[in-house]
Image (cartoon, rainbow, N blue to C red):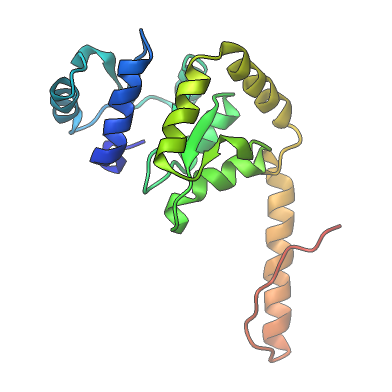
Length: 192
């Protein structure tokens, strides 16, 4: 995610995790805040070299490098959107903290749509504990990767044809309601 999404409270948790997980690195998107983040890491007792800044690359290279990471640590209060979806498509487990606003709930929606609601924490301490637990459990991470790989053909998140079909049907239903002079209303996709 972009570095402007990183709050001091979240950065503190990430630095605590680097203290707790020997040999771990924090892999971030390169940008204008890289030097400041390195300074902030050092101020928290973390070697700035443990923050790795990756440049933007073409989409295929972006997806490929996701496969090299162990965990995707989501940001808050503005969650990963496309980046989170990309990570899940690449088989990378995403851990998020569910917030209250739309922007803070997107990653949780993505995780529910691939059948991994257990990767959604409802508090920052819960998020930190979950990251720490998965960081130390390679078998659990592999099970999640296997589940993500299997979900590519069946999970609602990755079923673009069903999404397009449902969206089109909703647009037609809205147009029909308007033509009938009916007021706007909440519409749900019809189950087939």
